[in-house]
Length: 189
View 1 (cartoon, one colour):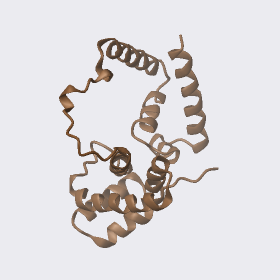
View 2 (tube, helix red, strand yellow):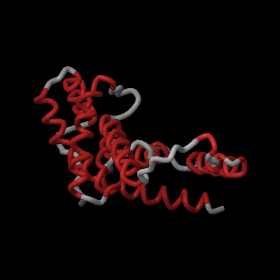
View 3 (cartoon, helix red, strand yellow):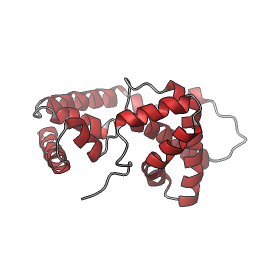
View 4 (cartoon, helix red, strand yellow):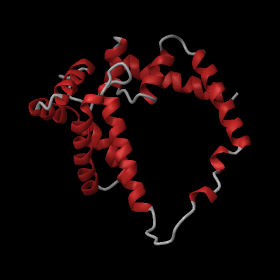
């Protein structure tokens, strides 16, 4: 059985409490938050950068941002780990952009660059795909659609899903596997 990257001793509620304490500049709470979450956040950063040294540097900056922005955390909008993972992803993407853009002294008129991502035909196709996905999610047995959204949109780990849905870890793995297969079949119709 694969162990969660989050410390077993911390729940979503306890991480939210740690973030509240961090917002009050509680260094002990920050240390505990780091100890409980650094492996998961490092994994997110490393999967994108694929360089350990740069990933470690970016992770330091991520935790600096968490320290600075802890007061803006809202538990009604996201789980603590999802909020921190979003900060990690955004900072990592900034790092990728900064290091992949060519240096240039040339002025660029960004208004003249065509944006093909919003072509009417593509927008219509994407909208149709989203509608189809929503319909397919609606066909899943309850609470599997909610579980799929929590896993793939909110970044919940399997253990977090097991805790949230009050089901054994094996059941969660089976539900995820079967639900994805069902969605794939529905989307390919």
